[in-house]
Amino acid sequence: MVQRQLPNPAELLELMKFKKPELNGKKRRLDAALTIDDLRTIAKRRTPKAAFDYTDGAAEGELSLSRARQAFRDVEFHPGILKPAPTVDTSVEVLGGPSALPFGIAPTGFTRLMQTEGEIAGAGAAAAAGIPFTLSTLGTTSIEGVKAANPHGRNWFQLYVMRDREISYELTRRAAAAGFDTLQFTVDTPVAGARLRDKRNGFSIPPQLTLGTIINAIPRPWWWYDFLTTPKLEFASLSTTGGTVGELLDAAMDPTISYDDLAVIRDIWPGKIVIKGVQNVEDSVRLRDAGVDGIVLSNHGGRQLDRAPIPFHLLPHVRKATGDDFTVMVDTGIMNGADIVASVALGADFTLIGRAYLYGLMAGGREGVDRTIEILRTEIERTMRLLGVSSLAELTPAHVTQLTRLVPVSGSLASAAAEAATR
Ligand SMILES: Cc1cc2nc3c(=O)[nH]c(=O)nc-3n(C[C@H](O)[C@H](O)[C@H](O)COP(=O)(O)O)c2cc1C
Image 1 (tube, helix red, strand yellow):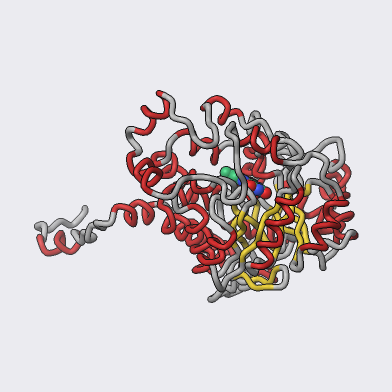
Image 2 (tube, helix red, strand yellow):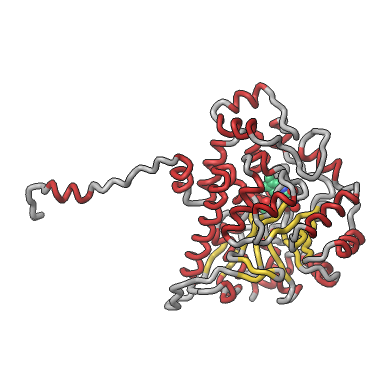
């Protein structure tokens, strides 16, 4: 028999400890976001469809992106037990400088379209967190503007080599003069990928108003208020004649860039050079031998060649072939700090986040980017603790299995995969 008593109001009162309501709507919204996916949901609600789709979308069937995200979800971690890690050190040295966390902000074009604070929010948040910020050639804030937002931290510049070479060289010189320490030379855009969402939305630069855009604007007044009351949205370093981003890329980019361009840029740029958009083992080795400082294994967040190799799958093979002393970074599909920990375990020196940063930006400007970094930091620290490691250097391939949902059965990675399976 359960023993019963008369209800005691004091006991009930003790249970009724309501939290003081948070009156700041933005803070309430951001605090409620526990994952990058949560930030994405808020971003979608608050951003006009064409701008959200430009950010969230990828090329053609968007398979490169969904496969890259799936590959991270298919990680199995192997924790060590009874290895106390009361504190964890998430800092790394990369390309001759420090970063408080093993990720930096990837270059993204047209960032002020997503939310008016754009690159200033990204660079400011990177400065506060002690991580590098990368400005795109197609950025909407000037090189000097980014430097002012992150005056003491690390700024990196992403270069597209354009048909008019002088424009690219001039930007490179300006970034060097402003003290940017690393150049990311992007090589995966000989032509633009087919971003079908942009086509379907009739999205163009500068944005054009259609009946659909106006109806879509009604529930998003704050975005429009920001858009109309802040400096005009335009590329900081390029002039445009209009069209979709794809059309613009095709007009501006030179599809004939080659190793010769690399040599010219090497002469102009005094800092570190990293090639972004590397997608196989052979190119990685050739670039190392050509003397670049590092590479980013990336398929441009799935925005270029659809069904491209999954960068995270390439990682262990590239690390093995290029040796321990070459800087290998990875991006595409990172949505969780655990994705970053798995990348470091499989040999990445560093990682970059594109959309994870932009979802935060769209969800809440500067504070939203701060929230992105905070969420990833928390996830990285927790994953490290649960794995029983107290520094990133302790992570090894033994901590991670890549489950084989998408195992190559023929083609260039197949023999490596077969070899791994029999180990
Ligand atoms: C909206 C958007 C714009 C981008 N613009 C550029 C760019 O101008 N230059 C570049 O090298 N990469 C660009 N990227 C690719 C990112 O630098 C990065 O490789 C990619 O976003 C990583 O994948 P993730 O978004 O899944 O993190 C862009 C990505 C997005 C989402």
